[in-house]
Image (cartoon, rainbow, N blue to C red; front, side, top):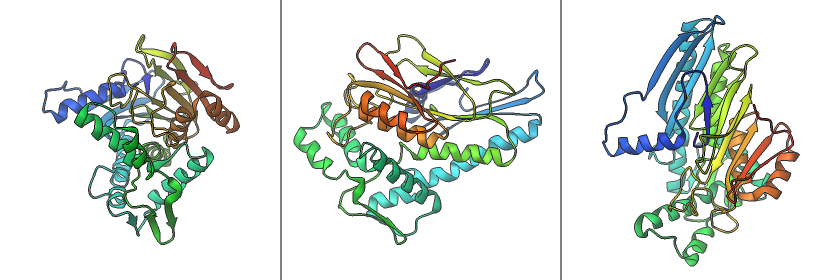
Length: 350
């Protein structure tokens, strides 16, 4: 992946970076290969039918692969998974003018909070507390400011201007209760990209499990959730991309009934040197420069998503202490100097 890649028989999924390139081409009206979106069906030797479908969603390409004795049930499961994801995108997409999140960012308050948004906001508050502020959804004004500055001038904004925007970043200044959500500072905004995407993938997995699916994999541009393995007694193999692109995969891990997510400086960046990117340390107002990528395995993608960002910001020493203190969570950190790898005690490769 950009984040992670998947090795799954003859059909390999594209990386997030490639996905973003394709999306960019679509926006420019350029011709792209006709393989996107894709759909495939196959009868496997173990008596299971494999149904795989890939669609553009959440700014990337999302693949759902289901294995089931009944091809019809597998097709139904894939459709239900995508339907649930599309429902939730209408809640969390901050770029749309008609979602609760975009309305909150525009008005600074939201009275009618749906259960899905309430849950994700509560989880975001938990990770903000757990990380002592390293995970902060109110970083949105600063991220957008960097993006706009580089688009206009090709250079980073001045430290004084960054400091002005940094004053708007503080998740403790979100009032969230039965009356709704309200920003306590004018000009604040939130981005749930680092947690809601994981939640959406988890909800798609729950939709599959509700109809009895035992083997499935969902890959949303590297946010990956496994239900069971790749059939009975067989794991899904997940390839973690080399941030330096010296080789396709830096490592391969096995995944069963769990999740993995990776945050990297190569995913969305504003300058050629990748010194300024979408992950920002809210204590300094700058992107961390010592870390190239962080991969987290956890029971859910929402946890893995939030923790990969958190550890990226905190760095190896503090980040690994946090990971080691959490149950069923493991991490691999790749630093920029020499592309060196550091893993938690329970991290396992294939």
